[in-house]
Image (cartoon, one colour):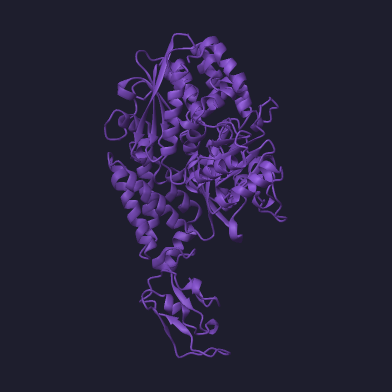
Length: 632
């Protein structure tokens, strides 16, 4: 069925009942008494959420109430640490870490008896450890403001009607029937939306450049999310794919393009599957293709799959890859808005950027600009990971402090450990030390302290992390991912890595710190693309804030965190050792033997570790119940 604008409005009203119970609307829903939402994002799927749905369907059928309960597989709810997640509406009961064996009790007690299963409800990890009965009560969500994620965990991403019920494609209808191209671009400029892919370039400015070009043009979406620990774009594509399609069509109208490409990682099978469904459904409804809404505007979208090359996140390398060539960056200028894909004017935005656009069109530029800070408008999605209680996906207004994200939304550092640093921007970013935890998160503040926003990865580290090792980890990643086209990146990053390896092995010299800084600054200034230009950031930021750890590695030949194996030594405190020999039996290389020393009040001679034989695997420590083995 090809939809007109009137048809779209009718479809929205007709299908509001499909989502009403989940969004607090009292529209009649017929026989359906409850909605059971099961997370179908990658995290929960890997934890068994598909099996949960199958078990729930069987149990409902067995109880004869399958026509009274609607089961919906959604995208990511955000609180990935608690998966698989299940939410029951209209009450909004939040069940976490649900197992197949719990399904029968949930059906009998809650779906039939109306009594939630308290033991399965999420408990806040606070002093009183109280149960939380719904999303609105959870500390994790209270400070969030969901814009690009507003449909994730709410709708069925494989049902276009649910997207339409949430005002889907209304923004596209608005621009095609009541706005000029210039007005659309001006709306983007007025909103202050900046690219969420890392550089933060104003979206409206990019569109304005492309609009001024002539001839064939392209609209591209960067879904090649390559930062370690990042899954923001994946979650949007899995939970709300139509928002990206709609936004790309709006961009196509604004710049005068009839064709778009989504470049998505092949390692994202769920995202790809749902994108393929969404594109097919949009075409069938006439929302992609020829003569959309009868306005004469044509626009269609194709998918292209990336093979996992990190460098293809750079816009010119991405376009080179779409063209069927090896993904390597091109010199700029000319910029893609002038000469991009297939040599034609092209705009490229990432998934999160596009996900904001339909709401900006519907709610207005000033609505979006009212959130965030003066120079960083709106919200930002972060993939929160590392040493944090609530790992997952969060969306907060720009300007929210790092402390609020880590301590309030993230639930703080587990196991009583101290916060040490946070890495933002992935391999392109830097490490933010604990004394800067009150820094408001926006583009300019992060750059000022030696980091960057990046696409939104936020890795939290505690006192057990070695910052020299962290710098090495990210640098090794960029060395592996360098395309090799330019010498500063290809050779320079490898030389940086060699110096770090030398320091970690205990062979460093103080002069190496000067060499690291000199080489890092050369690579930043001379590399061809953003990968090389930002590759030294983890090294420079850790040198800036954790120089004492570098000095300890070089001068004291010691890793303060006890991470770097070649600088780590295991020993046994003889007076604490009872001589049981459990550690020796666990040692894979026979480095532990009995001594002649018998501690006071002990019956057996103490054990000792031969440092020449020890491979520093750490297998002995967990076996000692008396904490006689220490690592230094």
